[in-house]
Length: 301
Ligand SMILES: Nc1ncnc2c1ncn2[C@@H]1O[C@H](COP(=O)(O)OP(=O)(O)OP(=O)(O)O)[C@@H](O)[C@H]1O
Ligand SMILES: [Mg+2]
Image (cartoon, rainbow, N blue to C red):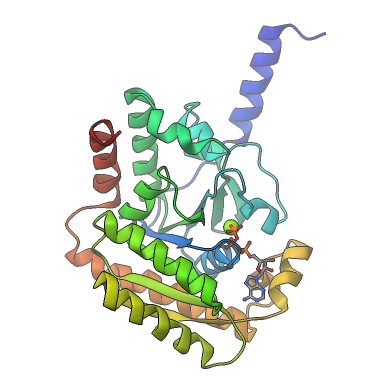
């Protein structure tokens, strides 16, 4: 039987060999940050996030997907991969992002969600500053970072959404999904989120269903919340999506030129470039905003 110190040494060795070393980006700046959320669950967030990320990665940008769906995370399953680490390792166990992330495909990396993120709000000062430093490094090492959120918005996910450069709410044309999207946007409004929220209508059965759904949602949001939305676009209901899920090969990899993939590429480019324009006006960075949560946290709780 292996002695405990030998086992520990072996674990360290395995961890070291899995650490990903990233070359500096040729043009290093601040990664664009895109948070994808919804009110109702199962509306397609993870599939849209992953395939949008793949489309940006295939255009030569380095992209990281952070699965913030704690407990139900599935980015690795959609990619047909398994990972032994999660974001909790970075948050709690002081593992670097580079040691905790997994390479998905060329230019695409991901970090899995882990159950128990409620710990975010109970991190001590050292753990939190370690996490922020790591996050800061990721902002330099990547061109774009997507956050795939769980359904609804937990207290621990909120800081990431409120700090992101672009927030996308995904809904389907179902009335229940529209109402849940409204509730999610109301939740953001309560937390003084001032940016425009981007809306993606997924699983549209006709070309007009997307804009009709958006109009309904924008109507209630304008009347009751006095907030503006932006219609990012509509995604068709397509059997290629469940097929890709079953095969564990993202549809953007299998059929990059399909109508579905072209729609995804267009959406991703809109979100990515929109943020480059906005970043010129933006005064506070993602990290500034995220770190302000830790300072306020003690007061709020
Ligand atoms: N455009 C689409 N056409 C057909 N099916 C779709 C489409 N988008 C998503 N789906 C199906 O919907 C299901 C849920 O998708 P997904 O896991 O991406 O949703 P989610 O919002 O991330 O769910 P959760 O809230 O559980 O995280 C999957 O089985 C997927 O096949
Ligand atoms: Mg999901």
